[in-house]
Length: 78
Image 1 (cartoon, rainbow, N blue to C red):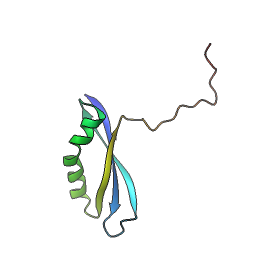
Image 2: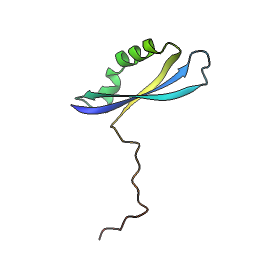
Image 3: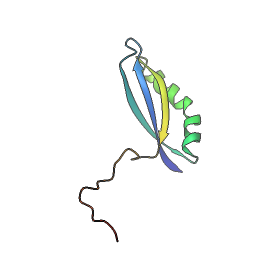
Image 4: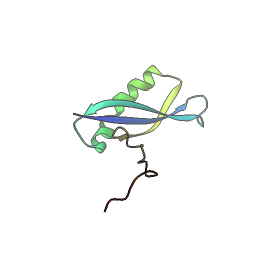
C-alpha cells in the first residue's frame, strides 16, 4: 500500500469566497485517479465533522509532490 495525500479544497458555508486546502493521508493500493474516485466517503466524513465548511473540489497526490528540488547549490553531472 502506498501513502497518498487527499487534498480537499473547502469553503466556508457562510462565506463561500473563504476557501482553503486541507490534506488527509491514507494508504491506497491504486493510482492517483483511483484515489480520487475512492475519496467521496472520506470527504463526507470530514464535512460531517466540520459542518461550517463544504468541499468544492479534491485531488490526490503522492506525499511531498509539492516539494521543489533545490538546484542552487548543485554541481552539474558530466
